Length: 289
Image 1 (spheres, one colour):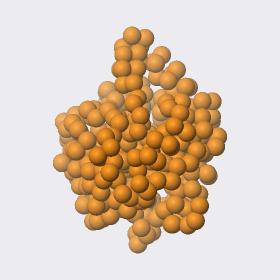
Image 2: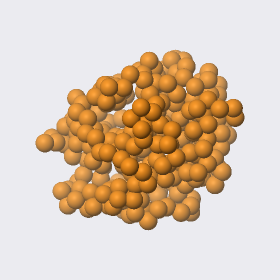
Image 3: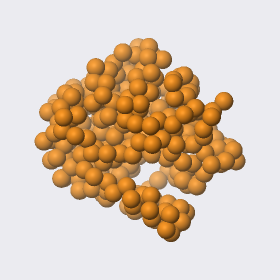
């Protein structure tokens, strides 16, 4: 039984589970739900694709769940064994027993997930906070990563003003902050009905229990990231300037391909999945640009 919870109440978790399972009922390909024990608790995963295909791990954003990858999993699982991970300590189906306190512990957690699945090396992709975690993994456990896909990674290459996310809700109330912040991030692009409702439930009833906020990586840390890396940023990104981040990342990573995704917001994998899916597959398969 979990000693800590990423939900503010049992009722909130129950509301979340109804919506999570409704999205799973629309999962476009065959899947299985896996529960992998780790030092930090049980990690829940939605696994799709042939067992003998190359593994691809997908990491979602903060205060979200593995169901965020609904628009991507059909295309990706035709080529890879896709593991859509419920990041431990976020409000989802994973069951934490203690919070993750630092970036090294996050890397340890994901190594334990790999080990629990019997996977030595894998491709890894992440959107927003998941992109930050993917880059963190490549810097701290580089031997376990094949290729890296970063989709609008939070911070990583430039500072995000964390006080905004902590002070503004305290001053004006979490509900007002959440609604205005979500509208700002989405930039008017459509959001799937169930996924949108799930996001609202998570924002109201969920919380991250981890103590790891996205940071800017030091140059010496990024020197360890030798892996082929694809950086995708939506043209309607608002948390930083897309062109500047791609240029900065290109100065820091030796093996980078950077690209701006048209008609996409901060959640580019969801707002323009067709483009993102095709670009990811070309990159992971090693096809010419």
